[in-house]
Length: 200
Image 1: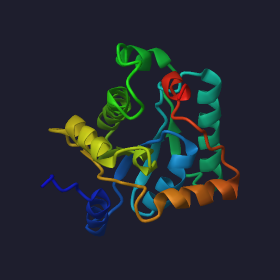
Image 2: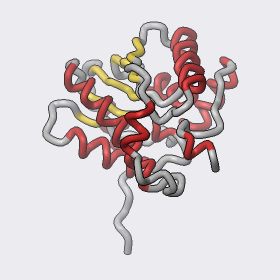
Image 3: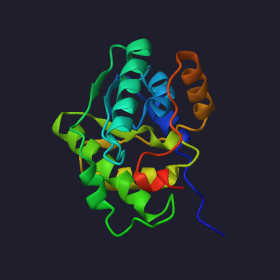
């Protein structure tokens, strides 16, 4: 009998139910479509700052397009939310995954990519007094929430910054993101971002 997977959406619901104030949350944003529902859902409970750190997007025009769509989404739906965008440096991703170029999509290379982006978000959150951090990545049906939560928790271990448990695809989150994108005409990309995912 296998180990039962955690229900991260239930964990998040329980945490939210126990809040009596609005904690500061640094939300790593991979793109506007994934961020759309996450922002709508979380802004009722947290003071959110978005962190657009995605060196895995190895084409600069694609990077700019996704960043500009995130800015447009926020301006239309949540103008009070600030977006932090570190300098674009795809070499950080390419160096991190060196030797894993031919791993299958969703394999070891992707785990390294998740950890790279979550660690950068965590470091910013820790340096700037955030109480929680997490990523919008789990809203995708192609992303393993168990894996993302395990990485996020491991990075935050021993810190005052906590990883916010999440599986944003639950409770109709992914479908709601599609609705929001349709409503505002948001660009929905067809690949994760790196040149390796673009070739499949």
